[in-house]
Length: 316
Ligand SMILES: NC(=O)c1ccc[n+]([C@@H]2O[C@H](COP(=O)([O-])OP(=O)(O)OC[C@H]3O[C@@H](n4cnc5c(N)ncnc54)[C@H](OP(=O)(O)O)[C@@H]3O)[C@@H](O)[C@H]2O)c1
Image (tube, rainbow, N blue to C red; front, side, top):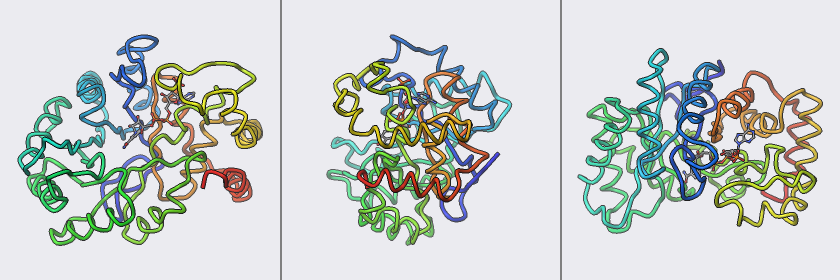
């Protein structure tokens, strides 16, 4: 299994993780209607069987349900050791460092583990708690062993650098910045996030790497399949939106035919081929988990990577 590290010399993890926002989330993803606990447990087990042992969650996903389900699934399938990345939500009412301690305690309890591989700050607004207080509280958790590595999410290049400098004073590296990155969202290449991450040795975790389904080949103006949940009102999934991305989705489909891979695997492989990007595609069932795991272990040719980069240029 292809592995990489969280940060330059950090914990080794599989070069692709599984995102679990949809596990328990009713607001955006409609959990409990067209899929539920049985399907997501099958996704967990299928990912493990396919060699993927890295899972991304957050305390806020399904208001704790995603972590609780992951905890249950790990208990039910204890053979493989699993790397969990979870997240802290810096809410306005969380004023002091002990909010971090309490949040870590609650996450570990739901996950039924003594420690997590990665703990990320979900967004950059710390409100009244300074980044200094927040990151030092996290550094204390690293020293106590409840968190193996610290990450941030949705941080700009400048915010990432500031966090890196604060943690450096504690001799702790900033391991990751988790940001949106896909063929249909390449902003991190033009706003210095990717460049700065590489300079600082911070790994990028690419969220929504399938553009929430747009890069899976399932949603096309021809096939008329409509997405479930909040995506129903997302204009990117309208006929007009799908027509706009057609040059790219046509190329992804052409490559998927030529390589005998699925469109999802081609789209994820474009990210993985860069060598230092870990995509964390969401999977709602075993089929999606197996399909996404199949993005590893092969590579698009440099010419085809360049072609994808060229056709996805409008989303840079
Ligand atoms: N840090 C943050 O602020 C943040 C924000 C967003 C996401 N995330 C993380 O990133 C993860 C992934 O992002 P995401 O869930 O937004 O988007 P995504 O991974 O781009 O898309 C996931 C959706 O695409 C469809 N899908 C996935 N694999 C498929 C396959 N092989 N074939 C066909 N359809 C497939 C499924 O929906 P359908 O089957 O219903 O189409 C699935 O729910 C999340 O679970 C979460 O862990 C983090």
